[in-house]
Length: 320
Image (cartoon, rainbow, N blue to C red; front, side, top):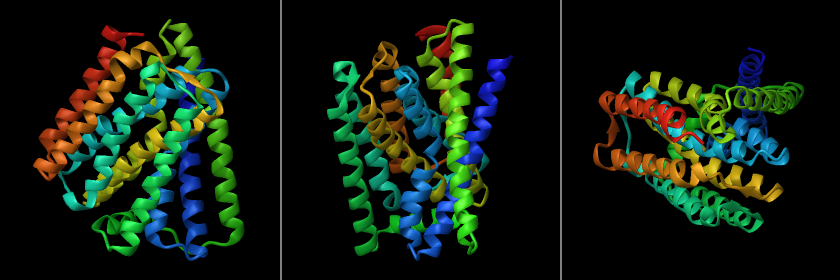
């Protein structure tokens, strides 16, 4: 019970910390005159992945590579199957293919890059450099295409920033919000790791399984909240775009930083099963976006059912 309590408290702190960090950062960007386009692309798109970042970095430093990698792979699977599935059940997500084409293709490409780099059963510092270099190229490409060529996706990222209403705030408020957010993220990640490791040891479940499921879902709550709010407001492009941006940063940014700090051996279970599920879900989403031009309630239900099957297989069949 104590470990479950640690896990829940850690998730709550991570969620609150991520929210405070995003709001503080958006307020700072607004005060500095940063464009909504850049704010949506970087702060919202990647800020929602702050819990995943802190947890995976902490796990890597503490010598828990299964949780560090499992958290990223599990979050990417959960973002598509669980979060987008839930959003599509709430309201069909009709999207403009031109708006999301670049990011959807990038998610698939990043998933393939992960498969290639973990071919040696580990992520080293050279792999980290490739991930971070790819992320830098993506950011430059995204910003230049939207800033100078009036790409439709530019409207999406501006809408992401506007989805979180931020009025002008004082420097003191911004400092407190950002500082509090960082402290909650760091503290929450430590508490969550204690609970996750304790649960794994108590039930004799491999840490990779816990990282892929419980930890991954817990750190994905910021993406869930923003996407669900966007779906309720009928802002389908924001709901889908938020998930695509998060998945890109999870693979290229979080794994890049984590492997740069500490080389990460990859669990055999992830090599044989989960990385293929991650690639398959990315391809499925790309297929839905290109052919149907929307995620219907039926497809949302299919995604949710797929996540239920994945979790069942994780514990009952595939194991560690």
